[in-house]
Length: 135
Image (tube, rainbow, N blue to C red; front, side):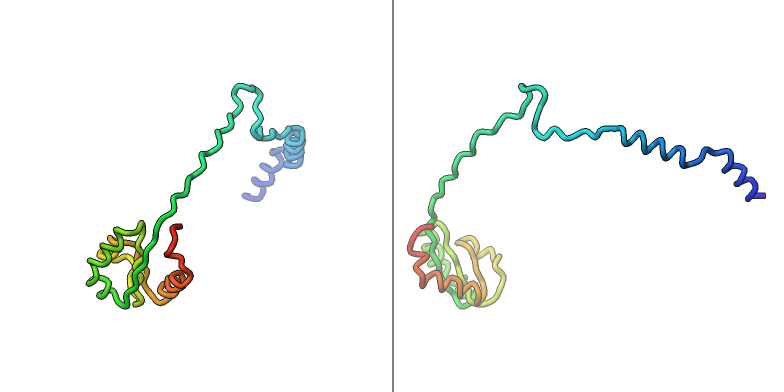
């Protein structure tokens, strides 16, 4: 009985072909709107160009560097760190031992670099004379 009822319902419904064709025809006739792309119909409402950004003036900084073999040695030498930090804009504290680079006791004096790789980088900077002139 269910099959008969379903067949009867299908006969009463309009066919999909007719409805889909009418949809296709109506969508073909519609024109797609294009984006405005910065053009405006009203010339007064056109976006105004921003003035050119002001050039940033680079102020060279003086850098200094101190090397330590361990964190304890660096922490014991606080007086020297304080004195050197006052002489330069940024003091680079390089500890050859591996460890954390966010030690608050040492960060108050300058930037902290820990490990053999950082020591090598700063050794090369010293050899090249990078710390002798402001950057």
